[in-house]
Length: 230
Ligand SMILES: Nc1ncnc2c1ncn2[C@@H]1O[C@H](COP(=O)(O)OP(=O)(O)O)[C@@H](O)[C@H]1O
Ligand SMILES: [Mg+2]
Image (cartoon, rainbow, N blue to C red; front, top):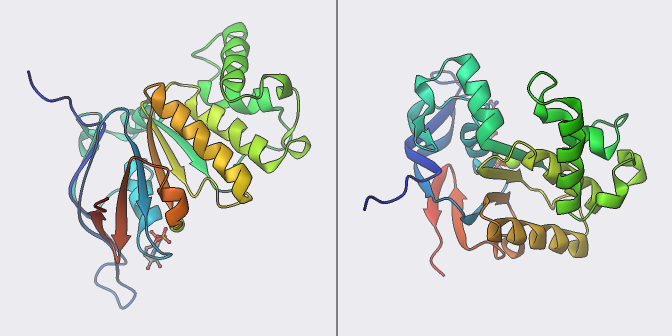
């Protein structure tokens, strides 16, 4: 039997900003990362170490200057803009420190957003968004706008939105950074539950206590990535 294809695999991945100028920054150097389906992984490192750069590459929001990235076995460099947008929509759910919810929309409408009007009929959109809110414990808050929700509730809405297209990977950049520690613990417990349900969670954080909740931790230092031995 062949080993399962990792959901995320980078080979010698590198990113240099403003190459060849005085402002040149080597943000990422020779990163080899393999994440299997169902892993809960933390990527830890101080500010400026390259975490967001790596997240942007894994999330196909930016392109590397060296190396290769295979997302669920697909070499993303071979995709045109349309195929890349599709891959991003289908494979990756994003969660950010600042939640990034649309203030005029209800929780349900925010969660339904990534489904796309053309692809999913209205009744199914509502049904799926409601189910996603229930899965994060917010079924009773679907009609509330973000300013009527606590920070932890807003982050759970953002997580439901990230999961609405059932992507194999949930990519979270400092998802507890704007939350008090108790609320942060609740979000981390939710990630563990999602991991138990078969999701892959990649958690980016500068905080060792947060990273300790993951099953594996990688540490970034000056653009280099190493797995922490526990
Ligand atoms: N768009 C950019 N242009 C130039 N330099 C950048 C850009 N984005 C990040 N950097 C630099 O790359 C390095 C890594 O940044 P970043 O990935 O944001 O780190 P982290 O998320 O760990 O704080 C830093 O030195 C930062 O100043
Ligand atoms: Mg960052």
